[in-house]
Length: 332
Figure (spheres, rainbow, N blue to C red):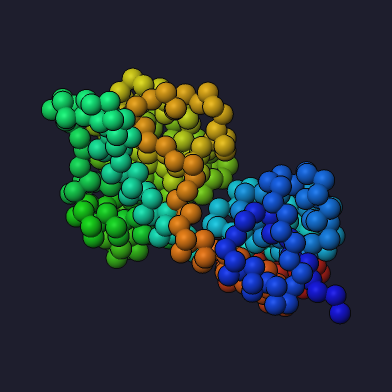
């Protein structure tokens, strides 16, 4: 009997690959774009696809007659057309909270690096000017600051625990999907709206998915509500912040700084205006790139693929209710 074919479209930890190889034919095709001829050839034969950043469009899905699941090696599924997959009976799943702690750690790293001007000071020290600079600059504090969490899912809560437990931060949060009692149990005060959070927070940290409703959630108006000495950190998705508005706010000193791990266009163009600013700390979408997080994501995405191929639901389905009962899904 032929083994099911699993296409892995980006590098993943060997623990997941080894699990898949026990029962499946694994094809590792790392071409980055689904329209690459070799990638398309592999996808046409696939029973399952595991991807980190591959853009999965309706046109691509239409060419995959055997495909039963697209498993995301990570949390965000904004690169996958979930509606198109659902219409075809294809399960979409992610890795749940596999990378939550890694992303939360990185959010705290960006907070500290931005508050202490680490990249800029690093360069100044190498030119001999750092010790004079320390007398002229005023650095920010994470200790006993007010941290505003926009989004209170796994990553937002983990970030809050680290800030509260390690730095005695006061937590305020805004997430219309989470009630005040749940937030209070996690040590955060629910804000009535985003505007109130932006006005009160010393540090604004974004932890929400990119959807039509959250795209450019933070624009010029929202940045103008923030305190002048406040900073904003984004480890979620680049499109949540209007980058042009952010650049203007940073350039004019409307806010003190920003820590950015994600961009509207990835990779960003070399002329991205953020690159010219000294009050911003940048990293290339590495929040969930720790060894432990990659191992967990690899294992969970492999387990998701194997579950569907065995006619079982994966642990973290995105479209379970919508795809239930479809003939291709063949899941109860």
